[in-house]
Length: 406
Image 1 (tube, rainbow, N blue to C red):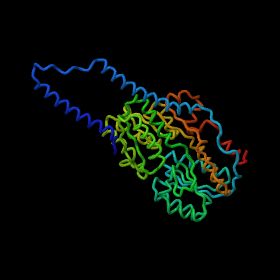
Image 2 (tube, helix red, strand yellow):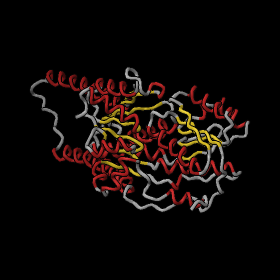
Image 3 (tube, helix red, strand yellow):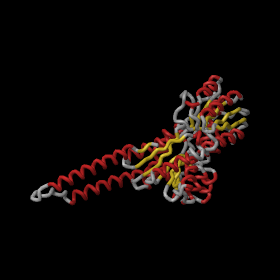
Image 4 (cartoon, rainbow, N blue to C red):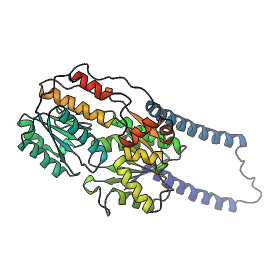
């Protein structure tokens, strides 16, 4: 567990100040009665200093609100197709291996199942390998995909640095590999489908800072397996808070995906223990599948009414909790299924010997809380609660069009 060092320094300086004040009091008591007492600072000076501190906090909160509202407003926008105008005709019968970081996480299972179903529509033979949150299992899955003669491999939230042995075999065998959700790949010639993960983190940091009125006390759950988490989601939110509110309290708890569902040492148990050890904390943040488990543990620990949750992905089950007024109050949203279609398109391009398309700027992002969800139509809100956010555009028709299927 790590705690914001700036806050600790502030506490330490405060303690030094108390000792210094005590010393001054003793000196004052020893001063002869005839000595005139020190002049007090003019009332207007103290008042002016207080107003200045209030102004700084107000500006900080206003800035955070504006940043968060930019993403919340995006949830209502009708987005245009910013993808390519054309793509090669898909090759029927292609064999594609889909290796998910772990199917127990909805954020990974959603795109894995989407790729599986899209492949079936294209006449491909697709297969999902469950990485179980374990790099050893994920590397074995890459090797299995090579041994089974896959024509292409899609890695979903799998860190390429941890599956190098399998990747080397795939590349040497001439099998195209593409990643889904990676800040950078090894080797860097492996293409990726992503959006701005740092903006996701900063958006959640903005929201929490805004809603706490500049007095944020948050537990940050930091996954150590995924670059998009510890450098994107966690990294972005932590950086935003430290840059804009150095006096805010942040406690970081690291967790590994291999223990994700373990009731004794998994993420839920870690979060509950950290909250109980730090009773001043009022917020907790992590990606939605993590948040779902954390919320259950906090309820069991009797902390459900005290803590507010902020998550990433806007998975259907998490959206339903936000709508119902549960622990989770907000989620950052990306169109996970649209990203899956984009990954399939780039696999198709690689199989046809063509360069991939950079979808980064074509993928819309947004954020939803209970208030904004309440402003959606019943139909749109139901869609989020059952399928997740779809980006406010008909991307499936656009992909079918560029593949010549319409």
